[in-house]
Length: 387
Ligand code: PMP
Ligand code: GLN
Image 1: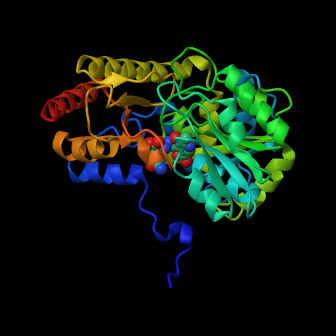
Image 2: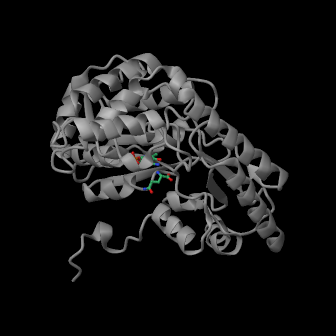
């Protein structure tokens, strides 16, 4: 009999690990896993180095250094008009740990949790490991709308939570005000807690600021908002994230967090606190750099005959392979392109449980324009061999 928990027994490495491994093995341009290739913000690197040299290198408090918990509240007050107190914040080792702690603290055996598909890959396994049951609600390209009837149909007497990823990875969709109202209404009617994975909140290209479900009337006590410095500053390896919620939810989630990572390297926490405190103008160069890369990849793909789906956020663009005249499934295209074209990508169907589209490819544009141009040229040449 297997000694391994059934959730992990037949589990493969994540699609991100898998594709990055193939990219390394085939010396491919990696537009799969989401990470920027730019020089990191020098002020943050300097802040982290200074904190390592001059401040504590010992365990910080389990809920995070006070400076960072305070700056997270100020950042959200300024950017999203949220009123949060530091005792409503837990610093975590990335959003991944925030999600794990929240799910372990709130999902009880037999609970059903609504997951919108496509869904970030850690949600379902963590729900199952906690004894819960993910229940899928399918979103459909190209607009990926949240449909009230579809959500209502998925709810049973066992539904306790839903997970909303807004903006949505991989689609780059931003939840509309109407959709936020639908989701909030569902939570209120059925007494659900919403875990809001908002790691992409600050990576937007529609000129609008993020509105959290937490900000919708009557939702303050039933939303767990999760953020990540990895995305805000393009420092994915730092793994500094956080949870914001009511004091009651924070206290419960803190009990799970204290036995996962317990705490997060203090130098990185202090550096992130300094980063969040920067004036808005200090964020602009990086946002402009990402916007230029996004425009370059969109134009290049378009010229080469690839149909790019509409999006407003994240470091990703999605290509509709079928609409681009390519008969391969996203998985087949991705598996072949990394070897034959030397470009790694993510098949969106790898982030969908159950039925769903099989013809959408995700590409990360947070790279230098010259690299993106080369990737498009390689993909265009590869496409010729398919048609
Ligand atoms: N949630 C979503 C939707 C993500 O896209 C990511 C990372 N790309 C994470 C969670 C994990 O974030 P972190 O690296 O801070 O753990
Ligand atoms: N979240 C990143 C992405 O969407 C990958 C993170 C990971 O590798 N687990 O590309």
